[in-house]
Image (tube, rainbow, N blue to C red):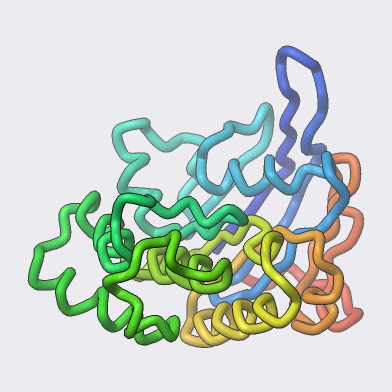
Length: 231
């Protein structure tokens, strides 16, 4: 589903090599952690999947489509298949919980009838069906992250990218967020999560891709090397 083929990324101004000869293959329905120290290349890798950055060399295939060749006019349609959950939630403070989630459907021109049907379903899924009329500032950090997850899944994306989604949360709340993400993954959604939280990685027992100096130094699940079996 997601394939990096000999991907390199060098930033022109600094000549910093952010990624070097990266070859990874993520299958549909996988739950994958991307770990590594600051500067290891995690953010660059994520931004390349979102096509916010272009590789210096190599190819990136999503559903066997080479997105490095994707025309700009097709970019909004490509991004509809990806939901994103950030560490800092990025909710719109002037909109209610319901409106924050509905907005994600409005910008892709979903009909009002569908919005009215699906937003309550998403709120129920994340355990916030009683908070739709609240504003973000009235919610706890964990509740705000649940809203951002509901927003990420509302358009039924094939892929969800999580960038340190538990970074601002306490351990107990983090466990609840990870359980929710696991449930979403088990429904068939591919999840890629960048994190520094070793406790969460150890608890989940999922696939772990480790980056260091822009290179993949380990790709394992349950202690075993992952094999290239999707294509």
